[in-house]
Length: 233
Image 1 (cartoon, rainbow, N blue to C red):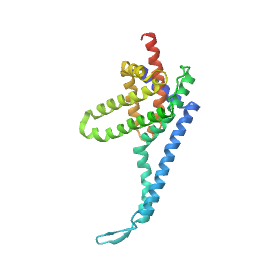
Image 2 (cartoon, rainbow, N blue to C red):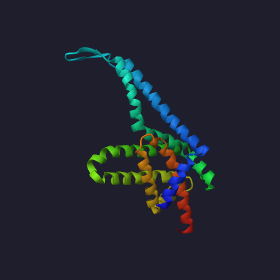
Image 3 (cartoon, rainbow, N blue to C red):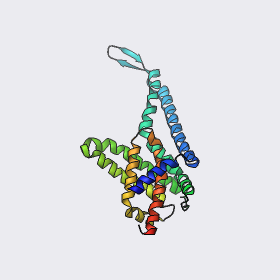
Image 4 (cartoon, one colour):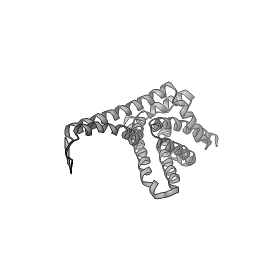
C-alpha cells in the first residue's frame, strides 16, 4: 500500500515537471480541441438538417430551427462530463512513452525502450476501453448493488486500470510474459494504485489529467517494485 501511495504522490509532483506538463497540456489541448470540433459539427448539422418548425396542438406551427441549433451548445459541458476521460486516456496512451521516459530521466531510473507506433496505438485503445468501462460500470452497477456498489465498482476497475497501466510501464523493461508475472506477484500494490486512479477518474474536469498522472505514477510503481524484487523484498 505504501508503494502505491508513494507512487501516486510522486506522479502528482511529476505533473509539474516541464516535460511531463508539456505532454499533459498537449493531451488536454487535443481533448478540448476535439470537443470544440464536435460541438461545431453538431451545431452545423442541426442548422442544416434539423427541422425548421414543429406543429403543436393548440399552438400550431412553432419555429425551432435557430433555437435547436443554438441549444446544441449545451452539449459541450455534457461531452466534457462523459467523454473527457476516455478521450484524454486515448491521447495519454499515445504520449505515455514520453511521460515514462521523462519520469525515468528525472528520477534516475533505468531508461526503458518505448513501444513502436502500432503497440502505442494498441496501448491507447486498451486504456481508452478500460476508462470507458469505468464509466459504463458507474451507470450499471450503482442501482443494482446497493451499498456494495462503490466497493465492487472501485475494486473491479482498480484491478482493470492497474493491470493495463502496470503492463504499459513494465513492458518498457520486460517482455510481456515477465511483465505479467511481476504484476501478478505484486497485484495488491498494482490494484491499490488502480483504485486511486479509478476514484480520480470519476471526478469531472479533474479526470482529464488523470491518464497522464497514471502513466507517471505507474512508472514509479514499476521501478519501486522491480527494485524490491531484486533485493528480495
